[in-house]
Structure formats: structure tokens, C-alpha cells
Image (cartoon, rainbow, N blue to C red; front, side, top):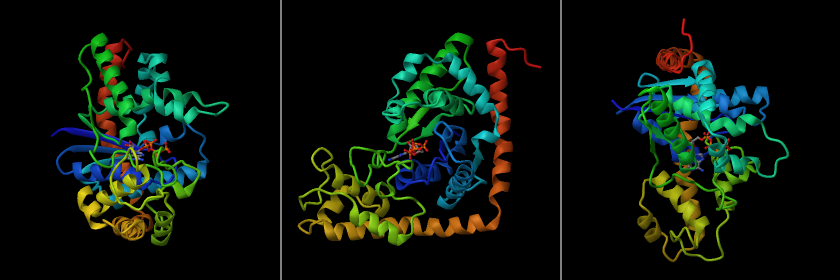
Length: 327
Ligand code: AQP
């Protein structure tokens, strides 16, 4: 079986973008692949986090994995910080990474833009992400479009290590969905939907109540036209909504265009909201059950144990190859 690894940051509430771009693919892949899905809490602290909020969000992301359909019997679900090999290999990968490579990362440029001071961890984050993936010799990494560049760097680092120290790492491939890899903000179609956006109207959180979802969609920016037409260049806002609709309702883009021909945006937005609610409501119900049941920590403990076996094996190999004394 091919091996899959991916993760999400508990840096806010998971959004519909996280779900469509990544989480729903995790759920699909678990049946055919050996999967490791983690909550990347060490990445979340690359920007300041309130400790109580971090803990709550970490539990929420893990519970949402399960609520969305990840079965801990099929896939290993764990918290990154509980498997200490991540931090260790992360450091070793940092030493292998060139400053210029990190300077080219667009996510760093976006997240540091206009800030007076940013933590060094925000800059070196891609090296830790490489470690996350390489520790499991993952073949496939399901991610949204925004992570493509980081994954390229992971591949370069794996090749560099293998070249210098001998074949060690599998070179991972990205697994990027054709539709929905980049869901845009509801208030600005030039920016991706992001859980850390301070404007809650810009995203749909997976845990938003149905009425909140309806309100956010009715307020989503469109254009002054009235044609429901997929044309990302000229109609980025409407095209984004069509992508969301297509993913949530399982309809093709041309079906949606035909369905709303000549009707304007009103009926389209109404149905879109119901399609989103239909996807998220059952997940929210399961989420409430999971948070109430107390099973989460046990799942995460077992996940940690399984992940550790694999990660420690690779870390040991790496340290031996680099010339550390391994006792
Ligand atoms: N807008 C999006 N459309 C499709 N996929 C997306 N992903 C993120 N935003 C979108 C994918 O979700 C996974 C988890 O992302 P992450 O937690 O590692 O952080 P991120 O990529 O930086 O996502 P956010 O939501 O924008 O978080 P913050 O605001 O904390 O930076 C990844 O696979 C990502 O591609």
C-alpha cells in the first residue's frame, strides 16, 4: 500500500477550504492507502497563539478529522508535538535548507508582509514540514494548492539528503484535487480562504451554525452581473462559489451553469447555502458526540504510539547516516 501523510494547523477553526482542499481527500484515501493524519500544532506556534485557544483548537481539529469520517482503525491520527522525532528531524532538515530557498516561499512572504517582527519559526517552517513528511517515507501528500511550493522544497531536501548521505528518503508526490484545491475568501476572491483571517465573514468554518453559513453566503461578494458562469478570470467571485457548490453538491460545473441560467444570483446562493449545510451539518452532529464522549485522548494516545514506531525508526537511520553517535 502506498503511504499517505498530511496535517492541518490548529491555528484557528478549520474552514470549508481546508475541508474541500484536503480533509475530504484524507477520508477517501484512508481506504486504499496506509494513512497518517496529524494535527500540526508545532506549526501553529509559528505565529503567536493563546495557550488556552491552542489547546481547544488542537482538540477541535482532531475531533473534526474523526467527525469528517477518518476512522482511527484505518488511519493513524495523532498530534505532531507528541511525537518528538518531528522536532528533531525538523532541526536536521533546517541545517540542510538554504536561506534562499526559504526566502522564495510565497507563504512566508504573505504571512510576514507588513509585520514589524516575525518569529524565525515562520521562516523555517517548510523545513519542519519536510521532516513531517520524510519521517514516514510518505509517497503521497494530499494538500491544497497553497502547499505545493512547500512540497517541492520537501522533495528537493529529500533528494539532497539522499545524494549526500545515501538513499534514505522516499521522494513524496503531492496529491492536489483538480477542483477545489484553492477555495477563495468570500469577501475577496484574490485571497485564499484562510482560518486565520481576522474577518470571520471571509470564511465558512466547518463548525459554523447553519444560519451563520446561510448569512455568510448571502453576504458573499459577487459582481454586478447576474450570470452564473464559471470564468475565474473575469468572474472570480462567482466562479469560487460555483467550485464550492460543485464540491458540496457533487454536481459538475456545467450542470450548475445550466441549472441557474437566466436566474441571477439569488436562487443560486440560496441553494449553495443549503448544499454547504447538508455537507457540514452531519459532521457537526458527530463532532458534538465525539467532544462529549471523552474518546478523543485515547485515539490520540494510540495514534502517537503507532506514529512513534515509524518515525523513530527513520530518525535513527538519519542520525546514523549523518554521523551522530547513536546509542
Ligand atoms: N482555501 C483553501 N482551499 C483549498 N485548500 C486549502 N487548504 C488551506 N486553505 C485552503 C489546505 O488545507 C490544509 C491545511 O492547511 P494548514 O492548516 O496547513 O494551513 P494553511 O495551508 O496555511 O491553511 P489556512 O487555513 O490558510 O491556515 P492559516 O490561516 O493558519 O495559514 C492544507 O493541505 C492546505 O493546502
